[in-house]
Image 1 (cartoon, rainbow, N blue to C red):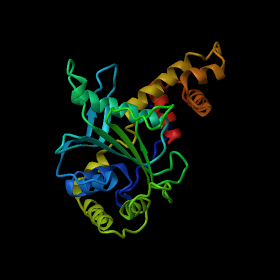
Image 2 (tube, helix red, strand yellow; image 1 turned 120 degrees about the horizontal axis):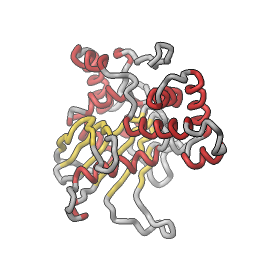
Image 3 (tube, rainbow, N blue to C red; image 1 turned 90 degrees about the vertical axis):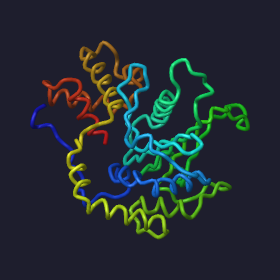
Image 4 (cartoon, rainbow, N blue to C red; image 1 turned 60 degrees about the vertical axis):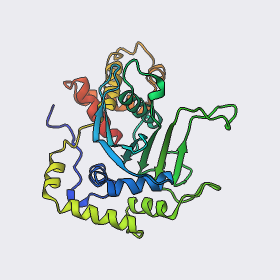
Length: 290
């Protein structure tokens, strides 16, 4: 890849906070930190948790590139949890939940097993932006009937968005002060609750750990989500293949289901770097999206 290609600057290790993906994963490796977080969000007591694997790469089993899970846990009741930190807005937010769900389900059920073996699951995203613009601290989701919201599909799959930028409750669905303190701390404010003070101490401990520093510095800053890279490679391939303008731009945007800025950025990068292959172009466009 050409030396002129822009690279994002890696955040200094000393500047990391709990809202940075690496630090979040590091802290949540300790069940004394992760279990209270789950109990707080779900409003229930959990006897014990075990780590299936931190930042586990799952294969969904069908034409897949794999998916990285930040913190993949199961509890004593065999309920599975995936906890993710979303530091910045990425495209296809809702479809990310769908894909993570499929990865968890395939991990649990082997080919030929009964659907009854699928476990109850929770996917929890902490977002450092408000994905729905309501200002709520929390956005919980279940599968309900479009015609009658009292009819809930019994798929035992729940998805929860914890909005770090939240500033109000949904009337009738108030969250605890502990959650508000947690989200405030994740948003860069001083810790106030016992739990956030414990997290803050853990952050300081990680920063004093030379092994963790070396681990962080060895991480490829530009290691994009493989699944997302695959999507963007497809965009680049299709857009590059339409250089003759056989398909109108508005049609191409609609077929690929992308915002027009991606089309513009792909063409811009190809023009600036005609020698780059599809993956190199996709990587640069992803950087522009970030």
